[in-house]
Length: 364
Image (cartoon, rainbow, N blue to C red):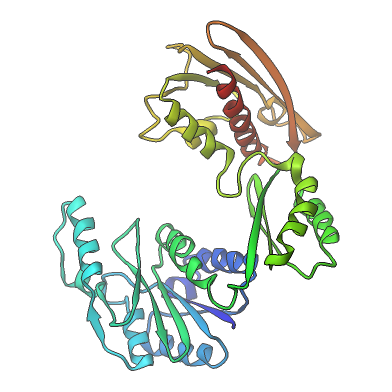
């Protein structure tokens, strides 16, 4: 089983738009151990799309098509695929309902272009789009799978990760399991070599995905090796784990604040507002005070990262200080995190989230 990616759009071919969708999807496929053979880009012309489908279908079992699902006259991907597989397009009521709901929210009326977005082959399995009108689809034809994804990255990548990837993981890989760890504070080249050496004789597939400041490490192995792999990897990564594989430390902190439902004060003179960006949501906005004007019962003052803000040369480590008070006790703690580049501010925000999570549980 092999996978190919076809990104459509004149803007990609002409270099006006960077093809970030294919890059991200390819990285994810690789980290999941799913075999990617080719990436292609072509114009919006039906003849070009069909020619690429003929070429890619010769040696690939799965083709991921990106772009051309919008409401305008140059959005022709669905029509090209229909012609290629020689099947008619029909209106899908779930797609129509989704588009109607999106347009009502924006106080817009449905038009002919929107109706075009409801057309798919009859057997298509629709893929939801939480961020736009263009639903995607998975089409099975002649022992092949075709995925249709929208072009805008804010729509394409969530749809791929949430709905297309789980389907891909079922194709020829059901006999294996995926184990994941989210590594914090380690150099990718250094920790990667340690892990590869430790697992060298087990016959497992490994993958890495950098999402600053984390490295997601994945191992794909048969069920009988799961316990063995965990017994090897867990001790090696123990000091680099500050969150679950599914969440960042800032996600866990935001959920904790929402669950406790009690206002706190966080005075942040470390991250330049990044921590607030990570934590501030409509549902948590009234619970977190990011200035000193109104001190809540539980308050934190964060300082440090001075060598970053004064543009001093990276020296390997930098200092963070947390002072806390809950009107009954107060105290502080000092930590050091890696300082290898300007990305240290992202490390600081996640490390502070990790420590605040535990301090809030301790002081609450």
